[in-house]
Image 1 (cartoon, rainbow over the protein chains, first blue to last red):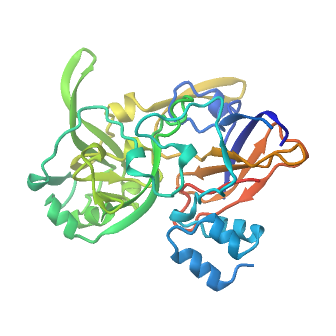
Image 2 (cartoon, rainbow over the protein chains, first blue to last red):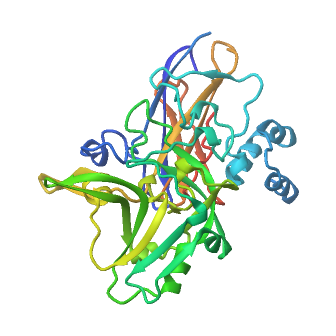
Amino acid sequence: MKPGKHTVISRAIDSKGRMQPTEKDDEIALKKTYWEAYQQIFREFELST
Amino acid sequence: MPTNSMQTKVIRSNRLTRRELFSKTSAATAAVLLSQFALPELVFPGEDDDEEHVPFLNLPRVTRKMLDWETLDSWLTPRDQVFDVHHYNVPAVDASNYHLELTGLVDKPLSLTIDAIRKRAAAEELMTLECSGNGSSPGFMGAVYNSRWTGTPLAALLKECGVKPGATEVVFFGHDTKNETIRKVTVEVPFGRSMSIEDAMNPRILLAYARDGQPLERRNGAPLRLIVPGWYGIANVKWLKRIEVRNRRYMGRFMGRDYVTLRGERQGNEVVFVESSVARMNLKSIIARVTRRPTKNGLIPVKAYGAAWSDGTEIARSKFKSTAAPGGPLALMRSRDPNTRGSSFLLVWAI
């Protein structure tokens, strides 16, 4: 990777083809309570030389 | 391909490090080995000496009794990183006078001491237990842990008692209580959760008295708690007092008023809001930590370590990507879960 700020994210897929949703997918975006927070999670970090 | 002897060595070793594994085989084979033979002790192997931890900018480190992802190096979560949540009081239950009642719509009600429970057939469950609120904010990411639970299977007890025709569900009550006000009436109620008869007959559900080979801690439900693999923490009732088979839907606070997910669902052109009780865990993954090596030719070698878990459905694969990574395709690691049937942390590292 080049020096600078980067964002990484992971996504799981199960044997039934179900995929971990993003924050923008309906099942997360339309959820109004905080339980079951299984959206993809961004991690930000910075690399310097 | 890995040899049988190599597989045997991996399986027999409690703490075979990645360095040891790489010294005996190629990097590619080692990666395959680690993903295919990811025994609990192997899932987060130690890093190489020249890897340097890169802190995350947007997510704070945990500060108390929760999983510290960035230092995780074993499958079983250290005791001091095991979270606990209680909604009512934290009762001190005297094990020497303890009785578990199994009542309601059964042919043969039972009252069992902790010694009687310990003398019954024992089983173990390796599983991931997650708070359903875990991940709801950047500072609340470590309310999840792995344990080896020991207890006696619930299903066998229910069969022994004989569930009567017409019974629809099983309710689990704890010793913890609190005054609750419902429509201006205040009464003291016990903590309770329920599940259908069919769900309760899952042979993997345990009445657990030990975690990682040690008696339960008071904060984690001593002397006996319910362990329901693949269900969020709220269903794993602590300080068990009574198990009651019923023919009416139990709608205690933690089934019908709290731990209720409100979600909009698209029905044609409209969004209909539906409330559902928090129960089974969802498919999830997380990047646990990122490491780097010294810069070489202007580029920095980076590794990401992570984990995935589910309600027990096998995890087919995990993808990792960097939105700022130069140079084309993003790494994809496949992994499987040989021991814990999907409800498990897994290695999903990428290079």
